[in-house]
Length: 437
Image (cartoon, rainbow, N blue to C red; front, side):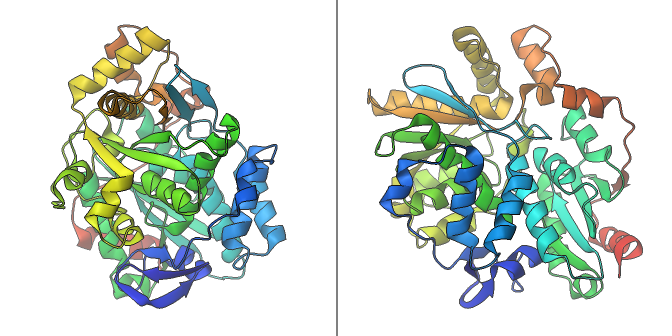
């Protein structure tokens, strides 16, 4: 796989360089120079396991970058959990993406990326330092994926008071090579600090630095896998009325879906379902992209005011608004609507959903009602286990939901964190003092 920077389409990079650098030297995001269109026979989905499907897809994309035997090892070690498809009605199903170690969809990307980086890092003497900003689930998934991976440190920035208690526990209880930094600001502040660090030669010249957010291309590739898995589980390769409703914050998950469609997966439409941080839905309606400071909501992982992956979406469609909106429609919802959706799913379908997935359900339901088509096959993504948001769910349903055993273990463990202000100089000093070569 060859890649280019979204700020310079003429300069090309290897997959290894893109993964290990995280962000291009000019500050742009890495984009595939081309995405192979899969042959028609691929969509017969004769693979009999999720792992075999993942390996076939990885081979199409990366066999020129990683030896096939290593790719097989990477898939075997990383794709150890499933993505079940649960039918709720004739038109609505949910693809559950929380069956990994941190109970979030980001486990797919983090587990894969940890194995890929470990392979590329095998001959380096100095440790690799992964700097990542999280609005909730990314940090826990990256911590779980990289915990005790030799030669790699992880530094996680998260916004003070804006992740759930159990999410924070998942960030702060690993220890060893995982360091948690609680920043007195928003996710956008955390993301801006990370981007500033990558652009600072006084840091990058003194420590090997890379990212694990969805700005890293290694996160997006495995997120493609479960879109294909949904079709494999359905068993209809030629069905052309499938729509995916994707709960969206930084838009990496939806971008991975768009990559899948470009490779030939017959997805009819994507629904960008957001909370009131509706920058992309507004763009899809007006053609104007207006970033703004994020607003805190119950669906905290989607509290993003300037989604990084929007630039990738534009490049994928030639920066043409009319083309982009042909494949994507956007809806946004407030907290009251989110709570109502949690209740609707529980009362009407006996299904317990987290706030982000409830928003995805709302987007899918509104799309079905607006389109007035009876043959739509709608799939919304459940991106996190509901007990990660136990307080919100308990209040919405007026009941006590059970906590997943993984969370119980984290909740009972002592956490460790460093508290820092939104001050780049302090972040700079912390990183040099603790991680310089």
